[in-house]
Image (tube, rainbow, N blue to C red; front, side):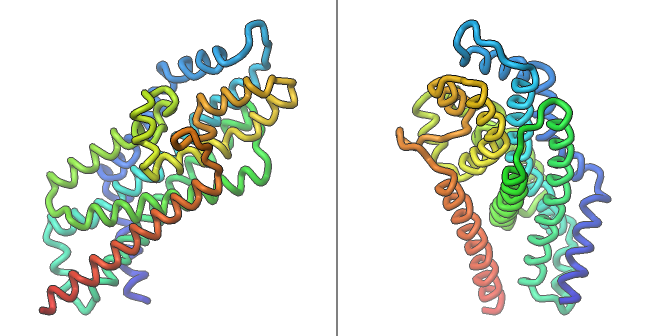
Length: 300
């Protein structure tokens, strides 16, 4: 246990000391914030206003609360995965720099090393994402707060589950990478591309029907939908209190991915939890099996 704790401490410190790795992990949230400030914010507002019946007036607080909920739910849902990939790049860097062989020479089990990388990656990602969540809560408190206590708890749980999802997926993929070039390629690809395929940069409802159906087979889509649902549920309920027609509310929820449809079948939140948690279990199980078989192969 002491060895494992020492490895977690070492990996966590190295991540925050490595300026390049730390800044790389922030590329995705910075891109999303930049896109929102430059044009996505207005796109979302126009899309929201177009969903309303002509002549309907709505307070600025409701609009900004809804758009702010979309922004931070998108930011967190994608950051939980992309930051996990970046923080897990230390495992590849140790291979590329020849540090991993030195660690394996010491009386440290390979499974302990792998567990150390996994836990430190999850810990680093949780720290950054929960700090971003606090910033999001402060922003919503300033522009329009409609979150209930239950929503806040569910969002905290969502972040934790998505961080485990991102860490388990990145651990599984990064295990097979060995060079700095591979590390850079994967980090850049995930940082720039994941936000599009999980519906964080633009709602999946804006894509073609064929692409929507393909994306519904990806577990990340369900994690993003959970974030959208919990961040925006309070403000959507407030729409009902302001006598919004139900068809308008349903249209807003569908247009902004607060509810998903799998081949015209509505996906409930509990179904999304099953998909994302099952994916975490599957990826962690695969990561464990790879380490076990790798250890047996080395012995033989």
